[in-house]
Length: 225
Image (cartoon, rainbow, N blue to C red; front, side, top):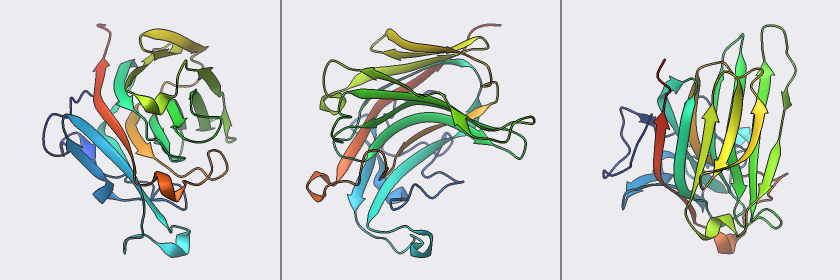
């Protein structure tokens, strides 16, 4: 599940240009027109705009954002991205999830609010369990690491090592957090997106839009059995 984003468009064999199961976090609507590939990078844009496709009756208005999701699922491995988060209150995220009637789990490599006050240097990491055959209550384990500079000011390398025993997060090659892997043994989709998070980062400021989250590459390795 690697991509150098060297072409002129998103590879349709690898990616959906939206999230097929989710329209976005209200009020921002995931809009495929905000996804582009150029200059060797994937770009996800957040704008102050409304489009005919957004269902206003479901709470979508004012903003469009962007998402891409892998067409294949992954389970365990080392996943690395080089990216620059957007410099606005909109989130820049890299995460894994899958939901079924029996099992719904998620691993968030990062959720960054590049220009949200107090969040400019925060590398937010999380894991979620929404549903298992024996549990039906959402819980999570959130972690934060403070970077030495504002994350949206440049490109950095973020990575996740996920195996049967533990999950480890990295920043520029250095491990910054790890947890025991007690629940995350489900094959998951790989996702990049930007969302409005009114209760966490606050809504974007007009002066900061449009804002762009740019991914130079995503690379994945699997251990030999």
